[in-house]
Image (cartoon, rainbow, N blue to C red; front, side, top):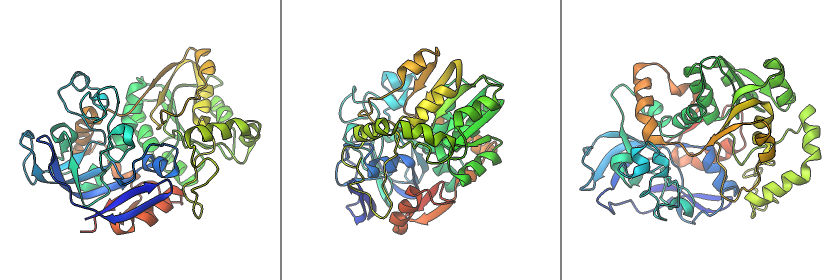
Length: 408
């Protein structure tokens, strides 16, 4: 079968690989009818999340049809249409029973202290082969799969595999109250769903921060106020929009590939921190900090890994809440803790507890409360996955979220 395989930083290939088989009694094998490209995947190719094992199939979003079931998977039938939870979970350990399914004690082959296991990630997460393929093995399938309700399309379901629940998780852990003013840093797919989720939870005002006009336009269509940090100082703009107070909640939906301003009033501040930013990039991307694996303008690491965090902390009111759902690797050791501590901020962060959230969101979609396909901008065949990655990586206008269709 065809699958997108990680070979090295800056080196991904659409390869012929063996079809997956049942390996454990808790496994299932699905035929994928949809997958997707996520910004998290770009971290692995850019080298800002290290530890990838050559030969790992990428991708952690999927919708498909069950073709094989292990003996212990007793809540599904062959032929069921399912959405794949991006993070794996057993469903019966203490963290799973408390709803913290991203911290399952049993899903990660590296042991209960290893943390989140997800598809297509580095060795610390398994590794478990991913979903940008024609078929996939699903470990702990009874909890890692969720049946897709009648009336929910593949296009809708694929967006509930990861990015919608992650955006919801970011708003949920921030404990948004009715009337709160919320700033969302990063208007990629997860940021768009963080905006939608904050509004569904009753936020009185959402301010979206990003440098790309198409993403800001999508945020405005949702009702967000927008700030382009390449044209104005984002912290000053947010303070102006909040009467000088700052926001109640800030959500970092960017992560380690954050970028500083290159134009406008915020660029001068970035110039003063150039060496600091360079050291941060070297810390998180040791084999690509000097663009050793950049090809034709692709796979460039973010040039200021802590920039979104700094802006978020500065934009918060005193005693506000910072929610971090952008991906940061264990190698990221730099954090503006003093700035946060001296504002009495509450900070919450982590990987989305997909299984605890996805059924609820699928029901909202089925009822018509929200149509997640408003964020879907591209549908491409798996055969064109490399070029799709290149366009998404360069943030080409219009490339916000891409669904992949298997070639079979």
